[in-house]
Image (cartoon, rainbow, N blue to C red; front, side):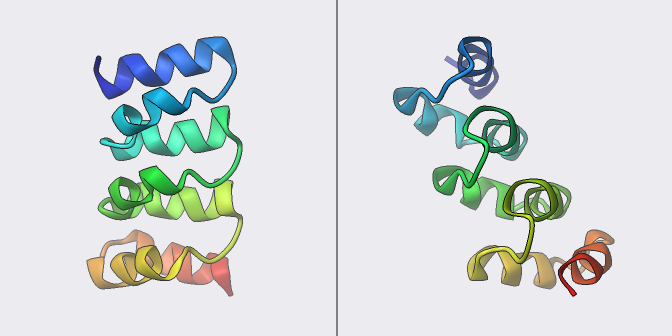
Length: 93
């Protein structure tokens, strides 16, 4: 099963499915949307994947955590030197 298939299964059921989380957490996109739309809060297992992408990290901070990212994600985003760093810094101030 792919991360996409696992995510859509959980989304269609409208609930968290812990046995699918190790699959979903492999991709930032599906980890973000799983956190935002299915479990409606932090998805700690998916945070390493999300932290590798500045855009999804910013979205995760803004729409899921609604504040500063956990330290390892915060630091990864700042070190990425991506355009979303400025948006993130402005958002958390």
